[in-house]
Each structure stands twice: as structure tokens, then as C-alpha cells.
Image 1 (cartoon, rainbow over the protein chains, first blue to last red):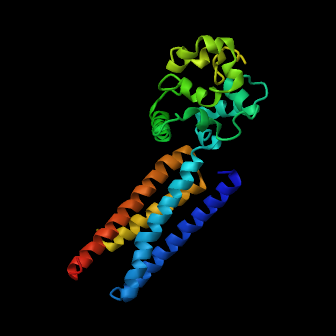
Image 2: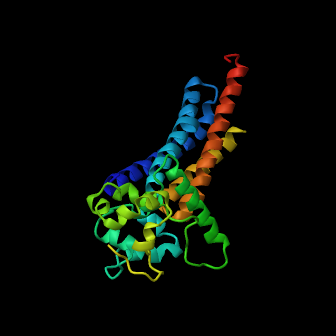
Image 3: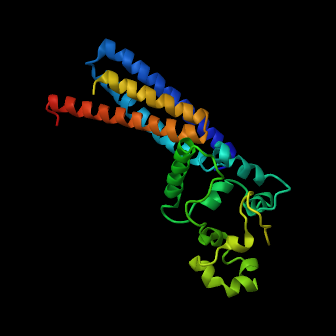
Length: 202
Length: 61
């Protein structure tokens, strides 16, 4: 979803929540007056059933979209250096290069850190919850690290099949190792983010 | 669950959802929105249960 479209969806969602709120208050007022009339019961169906459930569903969709945005990831303090580096012209880390050259134009964190599988999105959300839990419970705030090695498949999802990738003699030599994850793309092309000392290679 | 409790659950849930939408930071979304969703869900289930009880009382079901 484009950010303009997303803002409209968000505005509609907030309006829907306000309407739901108003209808609930109206139904509560109506209940005091005419609780046994059939018309009142229809109002209850709308106020207590349809609108709240509908609002919650629309909110789910809108906020699941919001969670893909870089600003969402950057809203946690430990993530700030990572997010800042994406737009820092002096930064040559892999993530910064991808972002600044518009190789990934939007939702950069989500694009690289969500596995391309059926449950990829759900697993990313669960990892996010784990990060949040660690953020509030850990006494020492250290540089965030991945829970498991970064999967090459996430890189290959875009790069595999691309001429520049396929024609590289190095990639041809270790193609199988890369597919199996025995050699990490980051061994040569890292670091992905600031805080580690190697320069990125093309 | 009483109608008043359903009303309170749903109002609180919608309010938390609106707050998460207005301030969509990670903490707000994960905590407020999840909690808001849960409250609305409890309210809706409470309402459905109440309707079923009513229908049984009037021998519709």
C-alpha cells in the first residue's frame, strides 16, 4: 500500500472506531428506555456485535500494514542507529546501500527481515514480540542481534536469477553452499548494519 | 457476562485500539492494540452468548 493510501485507510479506521464508540454509547442510552422492543435489539446487534468486530478487523489490517514501516521499527530506541544509517550518505553497510540506491524503496526492515514462506510474516511478528519483551525486561541494553543466522534465502529471493548475481564467478563456484546456507552472503557482503567493522563489497 | 460489562469491555477495547492507531509505536501497537483487540473480542463473545441465551429463553433455538 502506498503511504497516501495508507493514511486514508488509517483515517477511515479512526472514523470507524469513533462511530463504533458513538453507537455503543447510543445503544447503552437506548437500553435504559426501550430494552424489549425488537428495534432496540437490532441496534444492539449493530452496536455490540457488528461495529466493534468490524472495527477490530479493520484495525488489524491497518496496523499490520503499519508494522511494516521503517518508522515502526525505529520507534524502539535500540533500533535508532540502524534506521539512521539507512539515510546516512557516509554509511556503506549493506542495508544503507540497498536503501540509498533505492534497491528497496520502502519497508526496508520488513523486506529483509521477513522470511519468504507461508508463515514468514507471522514469525516476524513473534520475533518482534520477543524483541519487545527483551527490551523491557533486560537490564543491560546491548546492540540487538538476530536470534538465528540471517537466511541466505532472503537475499536470493531478489538476487537469484539476476544477471549480475548469476554471472559472478564466485557465486557460480559456491552456488550450492549459498543455497544450503553453508556460506552466508554476509561473509563477503557484510556487515549489514553499523557496529561491525568490515566494509561492504559489491 | 452482564450487558454493562460487555459495554465496558468494548468501549475500553475500542479506546485502546484508537490510541494504538494514533500513536503507532512498537510498544503501543504490541501492548495496547493486542489488549484492545482482546477486550473487544471478549465483549463480542459476551454479546453473542447473551443473544443465544435470549433466543433459547424464547424457544427460538
